[in-house]
Image 1 (cartoon, rainbow, N blue to C red):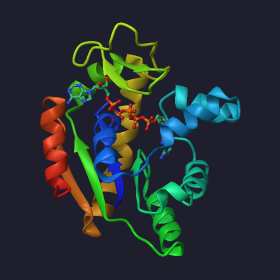
Image 2 (image 1 turned 90 degrees about the vertical axis):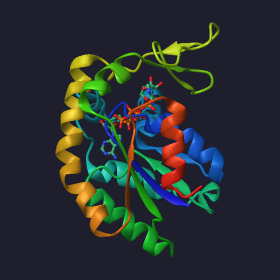
Image 3 (image 1 turned 120 degrees about the horizontal axis):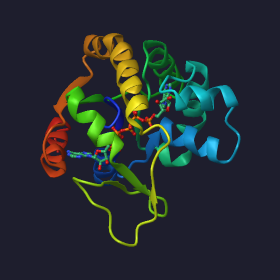
Length: 206
Ligand code: AP5
């Protein structure tokens, strides 16, 4: 299963990706997580740190290079879930070329759809447990008392609004691109986590 997971900031991609990856025994590859890890270890260029903090997209070449190295690792032999990549048509074209070189191709592109008004609240009240990587929400999915919580630097309202605008501008081309290739499946991301999970699994035919 080689799957691309697309959706606006705070739509629930990371939350649902955990279920999909468990179900198909594939790794979740999140360019956002990889960039944040590089930032934490001090290896991300300062201009890219600034771009992320402002809610913009880092250059295509930077994320394509990350994916190129990651998708040839052994744990990707039977597939992977790409969370947040590609985000632009040039990234999608680079991915196709990369997979074709490896003798493989994408199976499906899932687009998780959530109305703009809900995204701000979902992202701003998100907290992640540093030790487990589990994603929580202070209102909808409260963390356990012993969780060591982290609040992402780009999860503040003004930056989330900017990230939503960036996403809208970018998907204007990306979703039609994948629809034309016959790969796109849209899933309604509004409702309880379990309800969305059932829709995601239905869209994947499991
Ligand atoms: P990235 O880390 O990819 O962030 P994102 O796409 O903005 O997505 P999020 O992680 O914010 O949200 P999510 O959809 O995973 O939601 P979650 O499940 O956590 O990217 C960060 C930055 O890196 C970008 O801005 C860019 O600068 C850079 N970048 C990354 N990839 C790039 C690329 N390819 N090209 C260029 N730049 C790139 O859920 C959110 C909250 O909602 C949680 O609190 C959760 O508990 C809650 N929740 C989930 N589901 C529900 C539900 N059904 N009901 C109620 N609450 C829910």
